[in-house]
Length: 148
Image 1 (cartoon, rainbow, N blue to C red):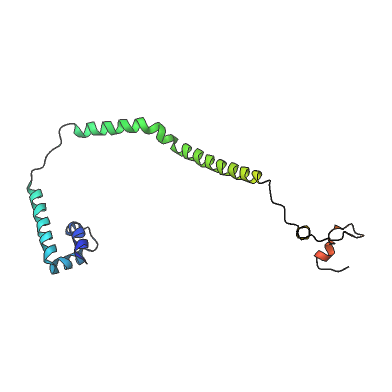
Image 2: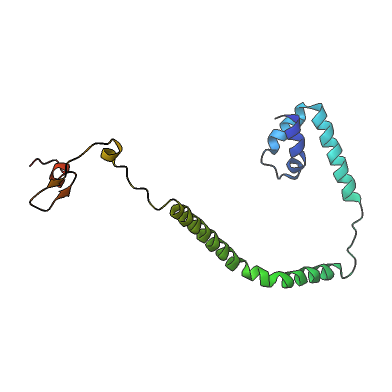
């Protein structure tokens, strides 16, 4: 463990609240600078422990709690509306995205038509006519892999 980490963890390790307290103790035993830091911290804690405890003025807790409850009461209508406002915001976002997608799609003339390779190449394909009612560029039976 390095000095910076040991010094950062020193107070919690002295309180027994640091899971790496044993590693901090091992570092402090081998590092004179961190040992001085630990001694200084222990002296400050001891001096604070000897200082007289100041009592809060009479009624302070009640006044603070009354102000907190007053602010909560003033905010409570808005707090109850938050879930509704969130749902409305999500619905508006979805509606905006859908309308934007529709506008973009419509501005491009709808779905693009697939390219007609024979027309693009300038090829002439004879029209077919079959007894079963097939018409067009190629009989469906040829497209399915059967020859007539």
